[in-house]
Length: 338
Ligand SMILES: Nc1nc2c(ncn2[C@@H]2O[C@H](COP(=O)(O)OP(=O)(O)OP(=O)(O)O)[C@@H](O)[C@H]2O)c(=O)[nH]1
Ligand SMILES: [Mg+2]
Image (cartoon, rainbow, N blue to C red; front, side, top):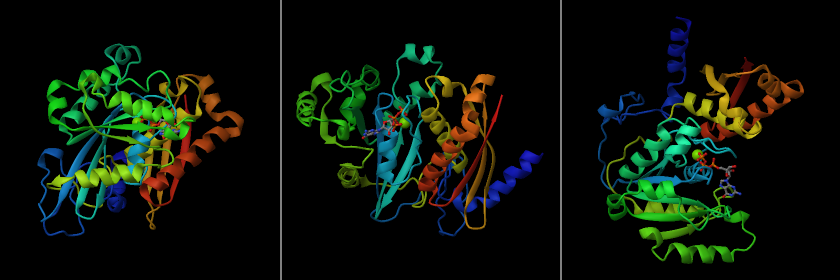
């Protein structure tokens, strides 16, 4: 009961924010201030003269920097990132609007094999979401980690598998060489361009970009390329919506990502992260309480290490990222339990 009342209060209090981060926002024809939340299949959009849009699927092996890139492209950190693999667990739409053009970036989980799916007990979305995204995209961007000596000159086998003949013939593809800031010798980029522009793997890349998603180097050019490639078409989202995730989802996933960053090895993967409370204050400031459930006492102690310094650090870093996502102040409390 308490939970239901709290949920209701959250809904009213966060109406303003939900306008920006909501699952499905119906575009009201009379353009009033109220935006009705609707299920996906009842979504309708209106066509305005001159509107253009483009859906971009970003595919890549785990940890190549897909989510970091999406955040740079839309200028908000709505897709949580971490230094560990499998941070993104399901497809997320991140939306960017400029003038008459709407870009919808589909951030996807890193592609994995059937074996990895089973071995690491990954959700089925790791298998389905990159596939669904590539089928529904107007353009596919394959992100490649140029820092990785072993994989940088090969397209990941799992990506090749999901790019069927049909997709290869129908949907234009570009290659995005990421993490160039990490390269000491930039000549390697020429070598990679050479390898990939020869039609190897029967992938015909329309263009190849060299960027650093971390520093933002080359990202403006890439965004401009997408804006220029947009085609006349209805906008799928209202122009002030930035993600198809709710604020609550973004907060929860951001804290999970920061746990991945701050705990050793496999430890953070066995934690359960839950949003216990969420409210929006009078100045649109967000307060949230997150609980982290640990499977053993040892992990509880690890998190509470140094008089809770580690936990405090995680909250501070997550708050900073969430401020960049919501453009408002965010106060997080994280509790730990066995
Ligand atoms: N040096 C450098 N690091 C980068 C760059 N892009 C991303 N990273 C780092 O690479 C790590 C992984 O980034 P993510 O954006 O989470 O990668 P991802 O492909 O979304 O990963 P998954 O969701 O786990 O598949 C993070 O530590 C990023 O800071 C880059 O251009 N340069
Ligand atoms: Mg990711």
